[in-house]
Image (tube, rainbow, N blue to C red; front, side, top):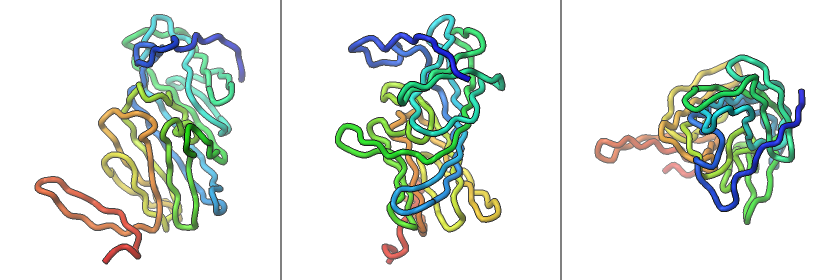
Length: 231
């Protein structure tokens, strides 16, 4: 479903949470990633749940950055929402207006072949340069290529990533490793970043890593390295 609704732009010269109509609190991202071909061809099925709160009275539209992928459904707390897409923007019409202080969850299911785009002086997206390597690069505005989000550096949120890869990959991502779960020929890897961060820092890497651990004082350090680099 589509609709048209004007959304006022961010005021010129104002880059702050206070200039945005809603505040991202937490992203819950689930991705199943299927390598297709080298270089850089993959297929993803995903669902992102965005916990947020309005910054204005009567918020009736949530504007998100989201590029290219096909949307299967958009729901606010279980209620289906209409939406519109313009370039790499996604505008979601809320079923009713909401006000500051409310705790809301917007869930978006999607799939497709994510694009690699050129921004500033670099390419951003999910890269698959060789059979045993898949990784992301999002700086400055690349997270929108695989997840709907407010992809500007002045809105920070916590994030949990649940990343399902073929079983021959080992996956590392932002935050603390929570668990890994085998599902037939796949493994789901869960990582949780409990400190709010900007979307351009969201990342994951998957390869045939081997791991080893050490400590520095009371700090545990886990290394993910290529087998050929482990002496």
